[in-house]
Image 1 (cartoon, helix red, strand yellow):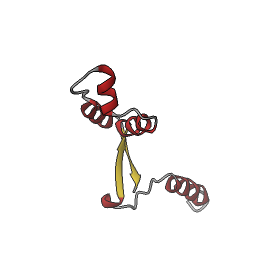
Image 2: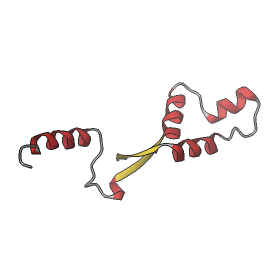
Image 3: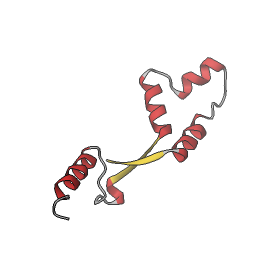
Length: 80
């Protein structure tokens, strides 16, 4: 077991650098999902729910429901 410890430590360090740390409590973790990523990317380019509704003449775009569905479909925990 001692001969693989350095390799295991490298893997653990890499995961921690990416924000994955199994020792963190639930309070220290934030759940992120695909819907969050899509929303933040579109917002970065000025595409908001309001703007989307204006473009297509909609009262409701169901963006929030779509975001929730994408988050439920694919999500992960990241360090706050």
